Image 1: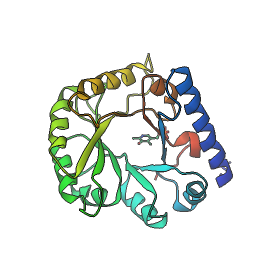
Image 2: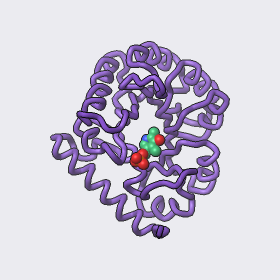
Image 3: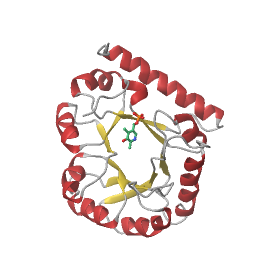
Image 4: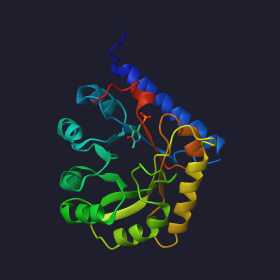
Length: 232
Ligand SMILES: *Cc1c(COP(=O)(O)O)cnc(C)c1O
């Protein structure tokens, strides 16, 4: 039997994740507030999100454009939206028009299109390079060896601002911190040439603590707030 969870439960679970983040930062000897929670709202309706958005100042992450656009329309204009899904090149225009952050830039063609399509009336789009950190064949993200060239390409695009790196490591790692440490090390190699690139978007419901221990500045959490998702 499934119970439709009411929004007070969502708010409680959101607050609980915030305390887990605070605890993980303290355990790692990191500054309070140095890791941001992005609430991953894919498959959750605007009706369900509205009370949480009203009660807490949150930022939302979405994976699918067709699902995200009506929610962006329904929720307040001031809402910050992060695009965290795969990007097809024919879908870059609505992403450039409606999102504040894009975590999944993994090739030059996508970066160029987002830049060309970012409306002049909006601030530059904040972008992260998605890295296939465990170099699995089937996965999205550029290879670690390609990050430098892609970062240089993005720096030449005036409507984009390179903010850092993102990854989705394979689940069930022997050492759950290892892929996160690898991404953190890769960011260190970029920082001297790209001073705005200081963000590490890594860690989801299953690996929040190891990601924060390794230096995550943004964690992307869905299931631990909303419960298991039914397929869209
Ligand atoms: C769905 C998703 C998340 C959230 O995962 P949970 O395990 O539900 O917390 C985070 N990042 C990306 C890229 C996702 O697609």
